[in-house]
Length: 144
Image (cartoon, rainbow, N blue to C red; front, side, top):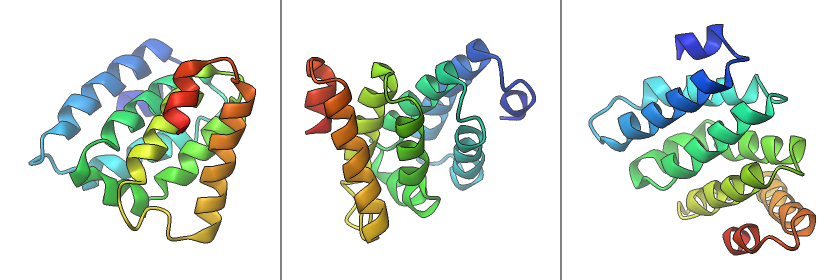
């Protein structure tokens, strides 16, 4: 995480680090609390670097699929970070597809969409992805 913070423009470093973090966080014994906040901070504080956002959204889709991580991601406003990335990069099909998948995975937690403002942002992000990528069956499927 420190290397990612120090080299925010390196898409190769970000991609490889995200792959490593997916594997690391899969293990339920890993102290994820120390990892999730810095991960989401990196994602939120580097919003315009499109390649890095692709890696972050892909990582979040995987991390949100792990039941033991959903509450942590939700508590740290992961849905807000995801929808911001999707809004910033509406034309990027990877960000849209993986963002939709991450939001769908997060929604499996009953507390995920309790906030009306978060629910509104999630629905808006998903609908915008579907509209912007009308011809992409992958995005349409993940959005459903």
